[in-house]
Length: 488
Image (cartoon, rainbow, N blue to C red; front, side, top):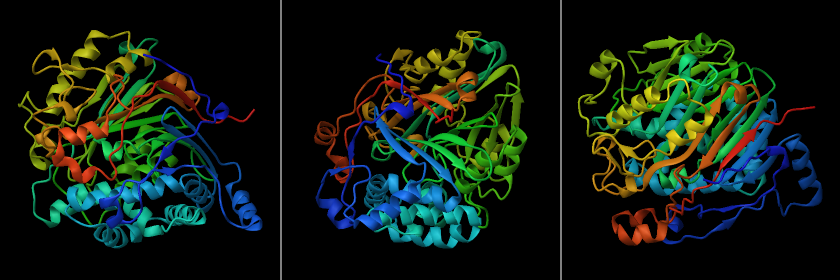
């Protein structure tokens, strides 16, 4: 596998992306839009004022990723974000407008109404100013986007996977997104923390989950994380801060429960990364005001002490495990028996389902590599195609590097039909040494190196023709090292 090293301060590549913004148009057309950075047709004076508001912010594109550096108060970092990612925010919004009527049985106006009533009143002043800044920055680049669009984007998973099933009185089959591990002590080479994660999502979304964000707020801790255009948090949750906290997660599949009076998960996740200096801080912030949405098995580490933890954050149950010598894994299974029985419909005894098969594979890999787990082995784990159910190399929904598009079974655990175009869309890995520099390795696309080609896939599987306006190729890139911008 080709490996390249990226220093974000020394890269200047360009990419393309885009689908049309209007729902009716996106059903009929697929029009690529060139991402041209900061070009503008505004008069010189207006353009100069906009550039001044960018301050120290900048953008660099490489190997499928978009690196952005943001710095300042909430309104400023929001404006920088919206300006630098205006094309991508507009494209992602168009994708959601096209997809949610099918995937969530509601149109985008429903998501906007839900975001306005459920989430906006519960956001603190800083979150509101940052979201308003994102919308303002995107509008300054000519995009018809408002603050409620940005709130709805940040909360679309909570609305689609938790709020709507409750309204419809359906058993919630929350998607089983992601595979992850965190290890420390005698399990790792050198004894420090090693953490890895790949993001499982439908490829229409995953192709756009390609932001690496270096965020220096005027208050709290500096954050370094992967993210999605328009998000104020990571979203798939691979994040570090300069207090030594490392965090990732995997969703708890088939979870049921949502409290509309609680605080949005996306706001709590952002607050926890920005203001935590310990595992205890992080857990306290995430539990406070918990609404049950985006229920996750959170894997947390403290680089300063070498301690790691797993918080399974349900709605009524939130068990916490912690150790300085061991590992925790995630593949969408609920580990706690009480949480599993009371808050999910998950079957922990079904060895054919994806979460259990991947759990077995993680446990085997952790034991086999005890004392030798490092960044390089983490990269290999995230590219793994061993199916513990068939005991063969078989890229499918049961492998750590997921390929549901190749699986005739699909992933019925979360209602992905046979050959659904989804799986591991990108991967990241970090250790204590890299975390001390706010840096991590990342690979866009499948870590195994297999590309996804949209056109032949849609010809072979016409049942997914509704995705044509926004489903693009997902080429597999190299592993690249991203690092926060450090002042001399």
